[in-house]
Length: 275
Length: 270
Image 1 (cartoon, rainbow over the protein chains, first blue to last red):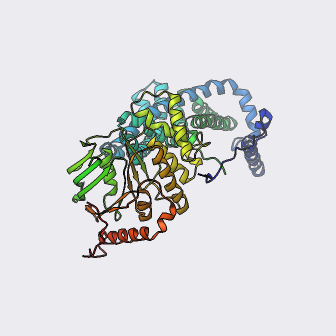
Image 2 (image 1 turned 30 degrees about the vertical axis):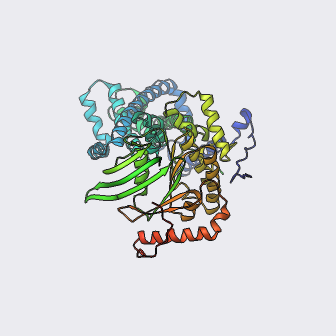
Image 3 (image 1 turned 90 degrees about the vertical axis):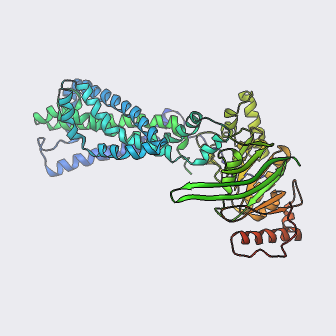
């Protein structure tokens, strides 16, 4: 039979190859340009208002602050980073666990949802002093705990929704072949939930940073960028405070794009080809 | 007569909060080996329940569902299914989607043999060259073809099609009807086709079962009188028009819009 495919997808022409091609590509140039514009605007606003250093720092004050405290930035930046990552890993483990339980069992979903929502609704800033008192002296543990508590909720919800909204036909296809529940989970439920999981993980990354810094600022124990921020505050060192904020933003961006890279590897199929 | 699929006196009710909801009540369907049976009926009359019963995903409250004279009590790998929603796994290539059943059904095929089997099916339905594409890169008709290949890859005895062409445009649908016939020539199976399209039912099947409104029972059985491949022109013959008129009338009865006539056309079998 003469058969004509309904549409043929032609292979795309190769893009500008090599490192130069990458560095001049839109994906690199556009965000850098945006950052430059942002810094210029910031500088302009501070300059136009004639704000002095002790009221508002401008971008041009920051290099001096970094140069003066670079060692502290490295040490404390690392402290913030590893505690955030450990909190996040815990959030992933516990969040996926809760998500699976709620995704597969209606009863558990009905039972746990209000509890989790209530827990999530409590401002974590109020939990910080409780945790700090409860585990007094365990700085690393406390910080990780807050980072975990603030960031596991989106993961639990997205995994449970991903699993519970699995179309019954997907199950039927495998069940009609005699597949076990484990096989169905491994072959279908797990991969199908990955895009939702990574979506939630992107939210959780930034939340985990908030959690870490809450603990570092509210209950200062001399560790992490939060503590550095707090010392800047105590000394009215505005450039230092702003330098910490920018460092935090930088770490947040790095971690976020690590998640994006992981998403591309494990759930790249969910991304639609443009055009 | 040796019937591969034998459904007799099946009754089934779903449990709902407002009490049992009967969906099937006195269902009888028999399909000989190699036969192709289309099932038509009003919306919501329990046609999809029927597919689950044959696939062994559910057991009826009463009556019997037999394949090869053995009661169906659990899913069996000799059944292939395709739905209106092609439910392809978006994270797999088309080739890996088709291979999926071979990863579950016990078999001794090597990876290379599985691929070869999947490739030959894909080329049969005109999807050669699309093996490495993702489902999202294919049109609806192409996805449905891939879904058909997946349903057939483990050489099932029984192929259950639950409105597989329902969401496609008219021309794509006619394309797929033709492909269905070619496939059945090369990969013999016993088919049950759930459909809303009366033309589709007489074009593909050799027997059309009309179900009554819910709770469904077998209301009428039409013998199409032909089996095997046929030409699309076949649909525009006087004979086909007559069959369509009969089926249309039976559907109206099933919907409660027409009274059963004493002078009902005498094409019914059984």
